[in-house]
Image (cartoon, rainbow, N blue to C red; front, side, top):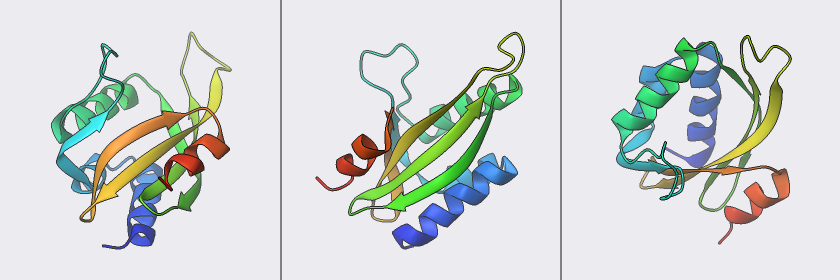
Length: 121
């Protein structure tokens, strides 16, 4: 699968809240979160469980942009939290680093420039 195809699949999985389609894009040992983060994920099942928990809590993430780079895809997410965080929303970037057609790492960035720069190392 090409990076462009993976970008389309990520967009579709978020739009449809399709965790099975999202899981199919992930490597078995995908990493998400810094090593010192108590909520870090170190496997496909941990990433999917975390996304499922967030969806269950009413968190909504909409992909508003994807940028294909050398090593993966930068995704801009517009994230909205439910009550009591009514009105809480934020745009953030996540890089989906890809090796052999699978997402091997998800990294968060607060701005577009940083997310894009990280894809070209």
